[in-house]
Length: 510
Image (cartoon, rainbow, N blue to C red):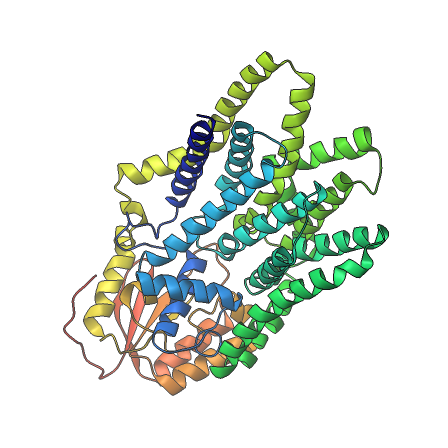
């Protein structure tokens, strides 16, 4: 009877995590309810790179972006499963794994119901602000970070870290580094802390195996990826785009100014769950533990370092904060344990019920409103065809070109390549803001146009509030005139230029 009851509780927890992850993942337009998803700027770029890979190309070498190579592997696998929906399966799996490890972390201290509450609170109080439709680098980094925090916090709760776990941690470290380097803070912070603790306890000799296992995990994955890039002649391009360009990107005097970095830090630190976590830990450090070297003080330092790392670019993109979600579990556990120690059991149950209801109103309302809007319209608003200007443009592209024809989009709207299934004529499928960060990119883009002569060029009209390309716009006008491209279609958002004498093809719209 006891085993049956225990199994029923586990099944209830599993069902809770599955439903929660599915509801959150439905905010992603690549879900199966949307026939032709209109993904946002970044996701469309990643899909474009994966589309180039499907045609035998390599990231960086044949299609530029400055994210890590592992991201494009995820997108390539996903789009091979299903062109429009396969990536969503990986996004949902990432959310589910993240929630599982967050729940397991809470279970280090709490019973099942309280652990579910902490998992829901840490996720819902932050994800509504940070998720941004999903499909971003942070989606795929969160499971590794959540797993690492579960192992690290378990160690400080008296659990051993076996060589196998250290190998997984090394693999996770490299996985995150191959997505975006500035998200690796937990892997740089906690292992040295643990090893110093072991040395202080006189167990330095026992560290050889853990350190070797950690190094083996990160080296093995790193070697696999490096070999894949090397055999595709893309390793040098990867180093240039992923390392060198990102250094320039994060040091840009306008985008990454000190003022912008401070504003970005304030933006992320003031989010409810992050601010609550800092307050709870500060209380523990200043009023309860009162030892600067306590674990709580170290955890405050970890959160601060993680905040500083995501603010390095000086931007306030909400999705940067997704990697902070797993770190909210421990402070919320402390908050709940503190409440349980000072409030009677009966009153605590009432308070927990009220807390859950208030969280549902405060955190879920934006998500509920969003999902209700999607269901009410049959998710049509997430369909690329809902944007009439874009849909009409795509119909024109399909009518005027064949699938083997290369096109170019001047601006930053890569959904045009993906939805029309036309490959970009240049390595630089988009030019803003990267050409403003590195002028050589703009020059190489126009060199590609001269060499490849795309059948059509789509110019994205500039918004009144958007920066004007100035130099690059003038260069595009000169190129269109010199190479005899004529305007053949336009609407409020886009203009199509076709090379004179290229003619039309019989095609069907999307």
